[in-house]
Length: 450
Image (tube, rainbow, N blue to C red; front, side, top):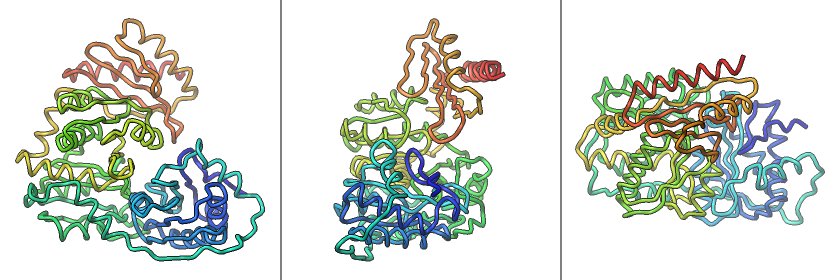
């Protein structure tokens, strides 16, 4: 039995050779046997294979004795929300996020929407799948559950409705599921939405929804410029990540969004802890301190960030990869809460989006994440550390290698999900220095890779 769809954090693979209804049914049975869950939320994304895989998964869950609460077509965050809100034992989202259209997968959580990954149960589920199964003495029952209204009410609770003013906003769902939520929010908000690739369509007629790829940004940027919108937002397929464009159609690096959201959230809470990843940090540290909060560094990756948020009872957590986490959202990531908060900030400030961002880019210019395929990553990273730790102010290994000097710093780490090394460089207000050091590090990596 091919179990290659089991990854570090979730399941992803090609349909039908790596994931199919037969395997999905066994995964449902294994999930119940390993976790002991009795009441499980199941939802699925817009992919053509999702309904069939979801149905087979539900059959397996019920055969093992668990009650299934089917929330239907949705985003990953709605499974997180429903599992926590209705105090279920667990939840499973059938999705392959931004993978190619012939792929599918699953994201699993336990009670309180705690992630189930390879270090806390996912490998046990994988290992149980090939073994024989017997049916539970009592089959679980099936119930369709409507969660959209409770979820939309929860989203609206993050913003002050009285502060909102009419804004024109471009929204690009990429033919994923985000448009369904925008249509529900629309009736409660004073915004005019210009809708791009809005209809859910698992054929992905405009390409796989993944705005992190530069070639997928043009449609949003052009719509912003053509309509004179205040900002643009684009989502991936299961809309747990959102990406921003200013009023000029410029794509905003996720790093600067983390700082802006931390600032906006701390203004509301009057302080608190903020979790951030180690790749780029100075802008976030600066804004969190100014807003009376405490910034705490965590290893990159949703399982690590969510656990650290729970440990610290942090109000907000952000990764530059466009994952944003909220304490009141079961410490989970949402692709809807961030844009609501930024729209609120635009209404409150009366400033264009670009002016809120330009000052931060000027203060802490960054390279953006640069990926390199390297034959022996540990050897290259160790050599870089040996060369660059001399005279450094600080060297850290929270996630990969972070080296800090007075005026610039960098982080070099191996990807958790791809066979690449990722480099991020930033400086204190010195674009030429940042650019020079980025070029220098890339040249050194290339030399070491030969």
